Length: 219
Length: 219
Image (tube, rainbow over all chains, first blue to last red; front, side):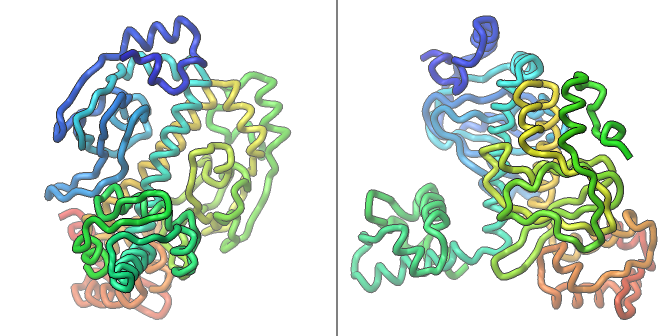
């Protein structure tokens, strides 16, 4: 297991930069359930996932949670090193949802790379934009919340009609039923899958947690 | 009015970069109420505010709105040039809240600067992080704060921006800022009035007890 084969833009770094990164990345294994970063610690480091699954979430003063996004193989978590970027003025918590192996990259070293390399800085920009986009998507769901409910309702209805938990149906067809875009349905189904409510295979949607889906529809 | 005196990191650019920026920035004046950018147009350009006030908001399919953040003098709007960064996968609308003068900077030219200059790229990173932080703050408000607190916060913020205790604003507009229904706002304002915190007349909300409103916001 070597950081060089996991860091997405490794080949765009100079040998000196590669060496800097290698020397400042610590390989670490954590068990499922481990809290790796909490908001008050501004500089845990950048997390580069080798294998496993991390969950980034927001935590209220009262202990309520909401999942912001998840990180899988080769994903990088920037917000666990928010001291690197002055304008990041919020706190998130990151925990392992599965047994996870990762590299923890020193914020100081990474910041040095960002400062000297436009390539690294632009790459970092893309990472932040990707997380920002996930949060905006979630915000839309929270605010207008119609598509998820309608999709949940549709799947339950379809399952009843077919007398089966396994629906042979394309995302396109579902989109046509709901009068929305296929991309929206695909994204939502993937979200449902990540929440354990459905299982997706090519051409089918299997309902795996009917009551959770029903609860989403009628909260 | 010259872009050089408004662009925040002008002095860190090389003469060639300064020239590129100058040649690709168009000075524009827009009236209050003008929609400058809507989500479907991915590349309106970067907006550098000279004077005035812009509002960035999210728009639902049903025409509901919620204010994400505002832009004032020397602020830069990046998300009106989201084509520059592949991973920005969301749409916002930007409108002038006051008569506004600004420079519209070509995304192609700016992207060229970002690609060649780590300084520009890191600066861009900071801008995005600042907007991301504002959206995260809003998300926290929506998730954990009740409407009365958010309304109190909005009235205080608005009063500060306008420099007046008397706000010329409709309940509908407030509802659009907060992403809630007009009826909810009207009901809450009447409650505030009965508590002596505001005084309502047709088309205005007057803050009559600032400290009580503030206490409601931050108990």
